[in-house]
Length: 160
Image (tube, rainbow, N blue to C red):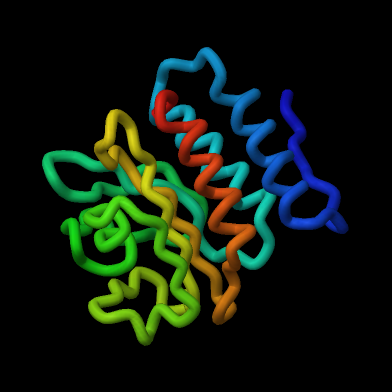
Protein backbone atom coordinates (compact mmCIF):
# COMPACT_ATOMS: atom_id res chain seq x y z
CA UNK A 1 0.00 0.00 0.00
CA UNK A 2 1.15 3.49 -0.82
CA UNK A 3 0.95 6.36 1.61
CA UNK A 4 2.09 9.49 -0.16
CA UNK A 5 1.49 12.46 2.09
CA UNK A 6 3.62 15.57 1.94
CA UNK A 7 4.77 17.41 5.02
CA UNK A 8 2.31 20.27 5.46
CA UNK A 9 5.06 22.79 6.21
CA UNK A 10 7.22 22.32 3.10
CA UNK A 11 7.85 24.96 0.46
CA UNK A 12 6.14 24.59 -2.91
CA UNK A 13 9.23 23.54 -4.87
CA UNK A 14 9.80 20.66 -2.42
CA UNK A 15 6.10 19.76 -2.46
CA UNK A 16 6.22 19.47 -6.24
CA UNK A 17 9.46 17.47 -6.09
CA UNK A 18 7.71 15.01 -3.77
CA UNK A 19 4.59 14.97 -5.96
CA UNK A 20 6.70 14.20 -9.02
CA UNK A 21 8.53 11.39 -7.19
CA UNK A 22 5.21 9.89 -6.04
CA UNK A 23 3.71 10.11 -9.54
CA UNK A 24 6.84 8.53 -10.99
CA UNK A 25 6.68 5.65 -8.49
CA UNK A 26 2.98 5.03 -9.13
CA UNK A 27 3.07 5.20 -12.93
CA UNK A 28 6.47 3.68 -13.76
CA UNK A 29 6.01 0.50 -15.76
CA UNK A 30 2.19 0.71 -15.77
CA UNK A 31 0.94 0.73 -19.37
CA UNK A 32 -2.70 1.59 -18.61
CA UNK A 33 -3.25 5.31 -19.19
CA UNK A 34 -6.55 5.46 -17.29
CA UNK A 35 -5.04 3.82 -14.21
CA UNK A 36 -2.13 6.25 -14.31
CA UNK A 37 -4.38 9.29 -14.69
CA UNK A 38 -6.62 8.06 -11.86
CA UNK A 39 -3.73 7.66 -9.44
CA UNK A 40 -2.23 11.02 -10.39
CA UNK A 41 -5.61 12.79 -10.01
CA UNK A 42 -5.78 11.35 -6.49
CA UNK A 43 -2.19 12.46 -5.78
CA UNK A 44 -2.98 15.99 -6.93
CA UNK A 45 -5.95 16.16 -4.58
CA UNK A 46 -3.84 14.78 -1.72
CA UNK A 47 -0.77 16.97 -2.29
CA UNK A 48 -2.08 20.36 -3.35
CA UNK A 49 -4.03 22.38 -0.80
CA UNK A 50 -7.06 24.54 -1.56
CA UNK A 51 -8.35 22.63 -4.60
CA UNK A 52 -11.93 21.75 -5.35
CA UNK A 53 -11.13 19.78 -8.54
CA UNK A 54 -8.06 18.06 -9.97
CA UNK A 55 -7.87 15.81 -12.96
CA UNK A 56 -7.51 15.23 -16.65
CA UNK A 57 -9.22 15.95 -19.91
CA UNK A 58 -8.06 13.69 -22.75
CA UNK A 59 -7.91 14.61 -26.43
CA UNK A 60 -10.35 12.36 -28.30
CA UNK A 61 -11.31 13.04 -31.92
CA UNK A 62 -10.32 16.69 -31.80
CA UNK A 63 -12.00 17.66 -28.52
CA UNK A 64 -11.34 17.31 -24.81
CA UNK A 65 -13.16 14.47 -23.07
CA UNK A 66 -13.33 14.10 -19.30
CA UNK A 67 -10.78 11.73 -17.82
CA UNK A 68 -10.08 10.60 -14.26
CA UNK A 69 -10.50 13.31 -11.64
CA UNK A 70 -11.09 14.10 -7.98
CA UNK A 71 -13.91 16.50 -7.22
CA UNK A 72 -17.50 17.21 -8.14
CA UNK A 73 -19.00 16.00 -11.44
CA UNK A 74 -17.63 17.94 -14.38
CA UNK A 75 -18.32 18.87 -17.98
CA UNK A 76 -17.80 15.83 -20.18
CA UNK A 77 -16.78 17.40 -23.49
CA UNK A 78 -14.97 20.68 -24.16
CA UNK A 79 -14.21 21.92 -27.68
CA UNK A 80 -10.69 23.11 -28.42
CA UNK A 81 -10.53 26.88 -27.95
CA UNK A 82 -13.45 27.02 -25.47
CA UNK A 83 -12.99 27.83 -21.80
CA UNK A 84 -9.69 27.62 -19.96
CA UNK A 85 -9.10 23.92 -20.72
CA UNK A 86 -9.98 24.21 -24.40
CA UNK A 87 -7.87 27.35 -24.78
CA UNK A 88 -4.84 25.67 -23.18
CA UNK A 89 -5.30 22.62 -25.40
CA UNK A 90 -5.62 24.73 -28.56
CA UNK A 91 -2.55 26.83 -27.78
CA UNK A 92 -0.44 24.05 -26.26
CA UNK A 93 0.48 26.46 -23.46
CA UNK A 94 -0.12 26.57 -19.73
CA UNK A 95 -2.91 28.88 -18.61
CA UNK A 96 -3.02 30.28 -15.10
CA UNK A 97 -6.22 32.20 -14.47
CA UNK A 98 -6.58 34.24 -11.27
CA UNK A 99 -10.30 34.91 -11.77
CA UNK A 100 -12.16 32.42 -13.95
CA UNK A 101 -15.25 34.64 -14.02
CA UNK A 102 -13.23 37.26 -15.91
CA UNK A 103 -11.95 34.70 -18.47
CA UNK A 104 -13.82 35.11 -21.78
CA UNK A 105 -15.90 32.01 -22.47
CA UNK A 106 -15.19 30.37 -19.12
CA UNK A 107 -17.09 27.09 -18.75
CA UNK A 108 -18.46 26.93 -15.21
CA UNK A 109 -18.64 23.24 -14.31
CA UNK A 110 -18.50 24.12 -10.60
CA UNK A 111 -19.74 27.56 -9.58
CA UNK A 112 -17.43 27.43 -6.53
CA UNK A 113 -14.30 27.57 -8.70
CA UNK A 114 -12.59 30.96 -8.68
CA UNK A 115 -9.13 30.27 -10.15
CA UNK A 116 -7.71 27.64 -12.46
CA UNK A 117 -4.44 26.19 -13.71
CA UNK A 118 -4.43 24.13 -16.90
CA UNK A 119 -1.28 22.46 -18.24
CA UNK A 120 -1.19 20.62 -21.58
CA UNK A 121 0.37 17.17 -21.73
CA UNK A 122 2.33 17.03 -25.00
CA UNK A 123 3.65 13.94 -26.76
CA UNK A 124 5.42 14.12 -30.14
CA UNK A 125 4.50 17.83 -30.43
CA UNK A 126 0.76 17.12 -30.04
CA UNK A 127 -1.45 17.84 -27.03
CA UNK A 128 -2.81 14.50 -25.81
CA UNK A 129 -4.47 15.73 -22.59
CA UNK A 130 -4.58 18.58 -20.12
CA UNK A 131 -4.12 18.57 -16.37
CA UNK A 132 -6.76 20.80 -14.82
CA UNK A 133 -6.68 22.22 -11.29
CA UNK A 134 -9.50 24.37 -9.90
CA UNK A 135 -9.62 26.27 -6.63
CA UNK A 136 -12.38 28.08 -4.76
CA UNK A 137 -9.80 30.79 -3.92
CA UNK A 138 -9.02 33.66 -6.31
CA UNK A 139 -5.42 33.81 -7.55
CA UNK A 140 -4.64 30.44 -5.92
CA UNK A 141 -1.97 29.41 -8.43
CA UNK A 142 1.46 30.96 -8.96
CA UNK A 143 4.57 30.35 -11.03
CA UNK A 144 5.73 27.56 -8.66
CA UNK A 145 2.44 25.73 -9.18
CA UNK A 146 2.70 26.12 -12.95
CA UNK A 147 6.30 24.86 -13.00
CA UNK A 148 5.45 21.90 -10.78
CA UNK A 149 2.49 20.80 -12.89
CA UNK A 150 4.48 21.34 -16.11
CA UNK A 151 7.14 18.94 -14.77
CA UNK A 152 4.38 16.45 -13.96
CA UNK A 153 2.92 16.80 -17.47
CA UNK A 154 6.36 16.10 -18.97
CA UNK A 155 6.71 12.96 -16.83
CA UNK A 156 3.25 11.73 -17.84
CA UNK A 157 3.58 12.43 -21.56
CA UNK A 158 4.70 8.83 -22.23
CA UNK A 159 2.62 7.24 -19.46
CA UNK A 160 -0.91 8.29 -20.37
